[in-house]
Length: 96
Image (cartoon, rainbow, N blue to C red; front, side, top):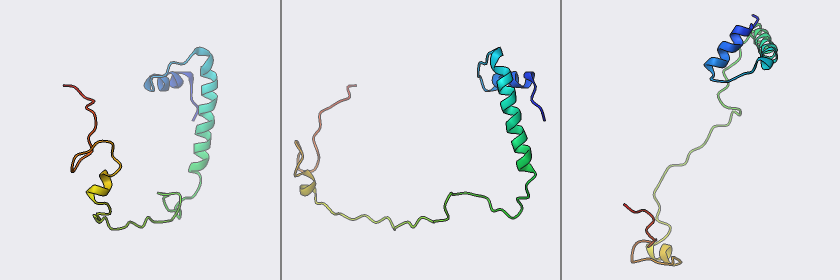
């Protein structure tokens, strides 16, 4: 399959890309090379090739998500600049 100039302009229009007249021949040659390469790939027998989902065959091992209280409230607030008995106190940054 060969790409002609009208096809280049149509693809550029669909992609909302503005191309100049001086770029058309270079784009035409590049797109023809891409299509030639794709035709070569279509000639290969890929019936025994498994689809590639991930680059490596490793499988993630997920741990169980369990809630664990490692810090007490007092330990968490110990280094806070401002706090009350339970919460950090921060300056107001949004006005309504």
